[in-house]
Amino acid sequence: MGSPITDKNKQVVFLKKRLDMFAELLEAIDPEETDLEDIDRMIQIVEEMDAKCREFKNRDL
Image 1 (tube, rainbow, N blue to C red):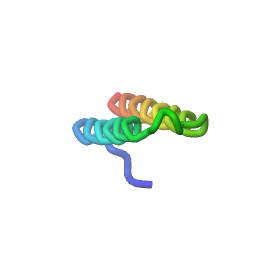
Image 2 (image 1 turned 60 degrees about the vertical axis):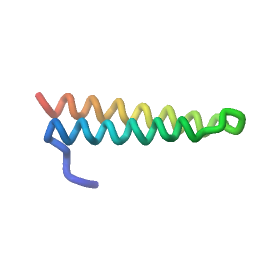
Image 3 (image 1 turned 180 degrees about the horizontal axis):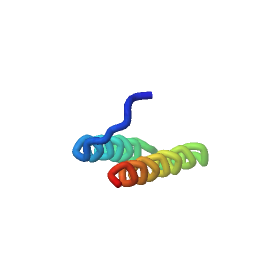
């Protein structure tokens, strides 16, 4: 695991990259072939991004 990101600008860049990757994932998914496991994974990704946002917010205190 890498060292913690403490620079505010780097935190924003990190989150933007994660959000861009998630948006690409959503665009690539075929709704007709998406199953519950795929949806669960997408929910997990959103929860991980939320946790990272909270971590960055608490790190700034």
